[in-house]
Length: 94
Length: 156
Image 1 (cartoon, each protein chain N blue to C red):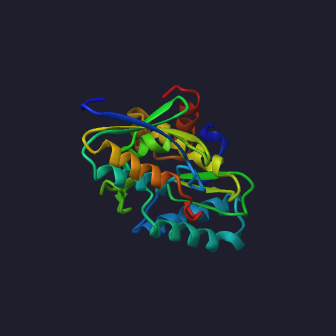
Image 2: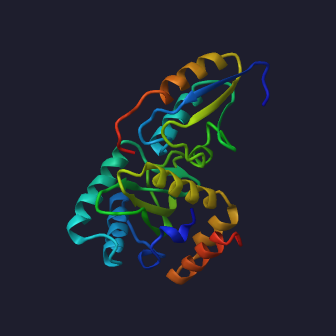
Image 3: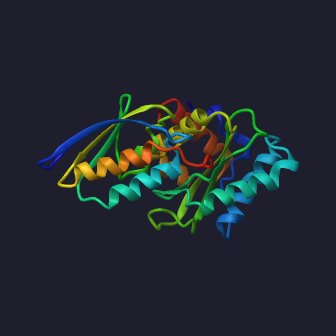
């Protein structure tokens, strides 16, 4: 990844239905507000967090541990926001 | 997970004609009913649930693909059908582009993992340009079935 700052954080996915399409849309919307790159790793798969196809292919189930990686000057902020998004349950419709 | 584990071959619509997102979804659900995979008594509730889900945000995920879906207690395992809309369909997709390939999924409410693995399978295949291209060119049920089988066998 390019960029002078690379920050990493591990979070537990608490979204009730896992990383389903609407949750992925929320991740993409969040990441798009930031200038740096964000990647999410689950198991042996790594997704560009701005790509719906990448994120869906993680097939991350509830309670899975996700590795977040962000670059750029606002890397810490984007990780904070992502952690908040991924760490709280939402209504079960997907 | 492989496509042949959950795509219902006889419900595939290789030449869908639809004026709207709702029409496409209705025809796909009806096709699953005709194939005997859902009961007529559940049809309207399933259509309504899928349309309600679309109101929360389009399942047009880009690359000309949409994956309308819902969870419903009438199915014991995940089922899906495929429709090809050769004229393109406005699905209010994330990338603003028309949709040509639709995978409609219905899964049991208590098994989110199956739903996620079904979506993972579909997007993994559709990420391949050749698979997407061949699928868009298919005009018969047997062509689609053969292509899905080849993809399951890693031949595409």
